[in-house]
Length: 530
Image 1 (cartoon, rainbow, N blue to C red):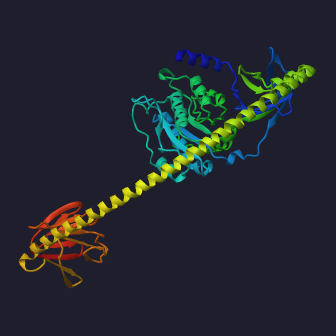
Image 2 (tube, helix red, strand yellow; image 1 turned 90 degrees about the vertical axis):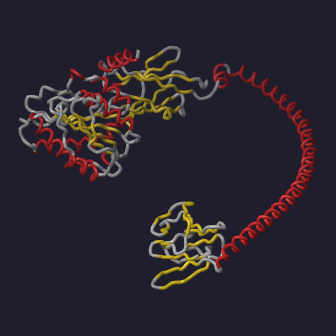
Image 3 (tube, rainbow, N blue to C red; image 1 turned 180 degrees about the horizontal axis):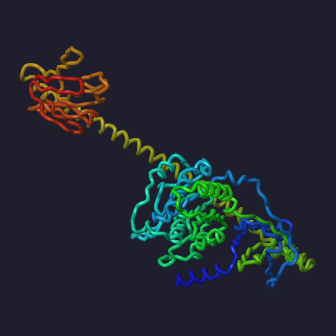
């Protein structure tokens, strides 16, 4: 079903002109009713005249509007300075007949980058030949859209055409490449006007193509992509010509001067390509946006009834017909006044009287209910305040009990810790003295007693042993005594801790210490003595 629809769309498209219009819905104005005005955008960059349009209005039936005003809306934009998104597609074939085209095209693009890329533009270069084994046609020269001329030049200078069965022919998959190019631009997230610059001989490999020219044109128009083409025009290839891609998408087409194709780089054609690319880039935004027109006419319906009515606009040289709805000002009541003024006045007086009676009755009922509700809210508020007061008292008592329990547990925990530490300290002194850490730094040494079961060493002043050295972490390592052995634990330090040459680094990485063990942190050396 989808294929049938696509074939119908292509068939209709192939017999219609290239005009593509749409209404600006927010431009429709009924401020001067019965005069109606609206604006349209026509993607065709060539200006139209009034006789190119037929305007109809649908009331009881569809009727042609004989008299309407028409004007072209000019803007003050400098289109050549506006930013754009360009995909440059270069046909790159390694066949001997195509060496001149290959080298000339690549050299021309390299030379013209600084002339057509402005800051804020998005440009990507791709190359194509025949569809490869992966059913892919397009290949990157530079991997992403960018405005960096330096980056694009760098990739372009590194580019080397692969030599394989897909590149050494004298034809290429042009429609397949364009189809992929339109998809690539559609997926690229950018609000800039999007266009393709295609440099090729327009000699398409029709036998194995999977899409037709009209399918590519239809897809490009649906996605707002303008296709511009440059035909290289080698001698004996002049009969291969395809202007439909540029014509069907509002782009420009350039045909280079003929050449035999036997030069390494054809400087004349190189200059022609550079000038063509520059001209395309300057006109690209204008051709992408098309032209805006304003229409106005006097509707044959002069009733302000608030109903929706439809306008139909047809482009005379195409089959395109677009419809726009507008809402007449006013409403049903105003329309009735226009039709029967006296009867409408009489009915309005009766309605106003009934409304006044209903409003007075509703107001009295509202006042009575509001007073009752106010008294109910007041009683509820008093109950709530009393309940909250009781809750606050209960919460204070609960907090007092909790705090007492927390303090009791804290004191009990401290006593247990102190009792445990006292036992461990006594064991530490069984050899007569506390263990010693001897710090050796800058040709001097200092000794420090390990007088606690848990002894911390680091740069921070919160440690039991502070070493002011930038290579030592704030809390570098801990020496702990478990009643039998002394253990060194690295606290996840930056540089780790060496014990007798072995590195210990990371949270909770530890080793037992023996008398005379050497502890090193970069240039700091510490000797452990029991």
